Image (tube, rainbow, N blue to C red; front, side, top):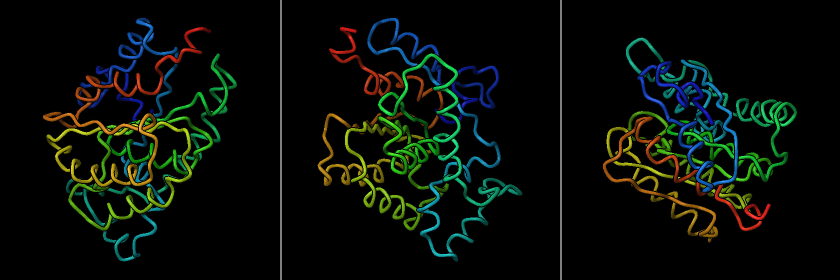
Length: 249
């Protein structure tokens, strides 16, 4: 999971919120609702987070003029939204080529793509589906909560069109992978419902098996760790629920 500093301990986060990943996952495992799993939290690159998580190939598909205009945007006065050139391809490669081999070599986990999942929220939602599409043979599924479909912090058709086009061009790479999207409609999530509907239409047009993907709408929910924590059990159960074979084992 991305944004690793935000996952486990509200005492060490910037906004005193957390995903409560350990509590949510632990409860599901103890209740026998899911097969046991571990969560590896990868910290973001702080001021470089937007450059790290923004899907690189859709960004590079924009005109040079548009790219330069995006690089001039400020998150707040004196601080660029993109603190460096977009480098999410390197981040995805790091996960696949360095993090996963390290975990599978040093921890008592099942090895192989059928046991690996990737997940995050907001910009972390973008990099989750993007990494899955670029490495479909390395993951069994992706969780994208409150996916930040605008890409920046204002409505921009050009940006979203490239995300949508990239998914349309690459969704055929997926076969049995599970994909989970969700969104609210308050604070930053208010930008998402109409955009998520277009992504959902892609999956339906592709006739992606209904049992393998979900798009969940949570009216009134906002763009916070508390909101994601309150519904985290839903995607975790979707990804890790016990099969009859797993229960027998």
